[in-house]
Length: 288
Image (tube, rainbow, N blue to C red; front, side, top):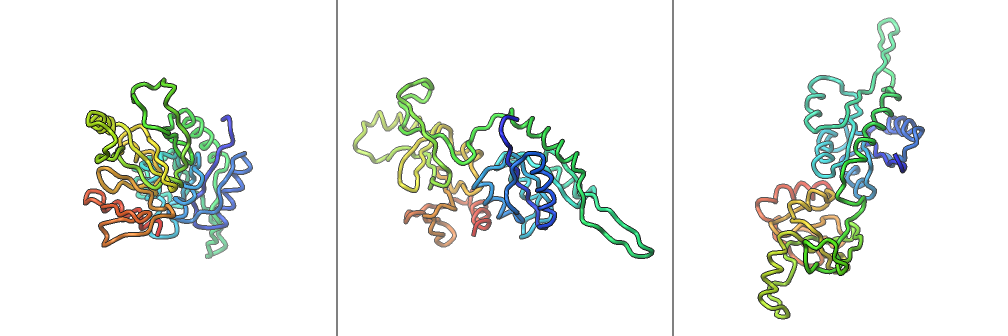
């Protein structure tokens, strides 16, 4: 592996976190700070995307590690290993549905003193853990990644020809996720009087394959792909609210909801369609 890999350990017991952190750090990995809940994990991921997550099943808060494992697989596309006290078949079968890279139990050592059973703290098979991590990172390093760790590459101007990938007139720049307010498939002002009708129709057609994003500074950029594909690559704080818009619900300009049917960002009101209402509620509940 060419560069130092960053590891997020999601564990609700501080002394276990520090034990695992010591093992992982000694093996040459960088490790994020103590993270004990799904909400905290999402915040850490959005700040610095890890290369691998070591995930306990029992966590603080309403959601457990299996819930987070599903998010890591479906929303973030980050590989993860369950490292847990639970070694029963029911837990294994349930957690395996989230497709982890591995499942490593914490081995408890029971010491018998006459009729008293003293349970020591969980102990990991250190060699197994590190070997699994190295093999997983070697496999996933070769997988194509369509997003940057903290942002995306966006077009500065609307490309004249979306199929002309080699055009020298098309320039791009990185845009951080934290600076993006929303994405929209409405790439032009349909009521614009500055464009001929033919050009408007052409841009409408092109809009099926490209989206416009607006930053907190109201700068417009453009991103290749339709919203259904784009949402698959975005962090969990981005949520689709209707057929034409994706919003960042953690941006500083997010002002809240109106009657549960609308969201307000920078004094602009966005309508939530029935199709996406449940998911919007879920995302907001994680952050607020």
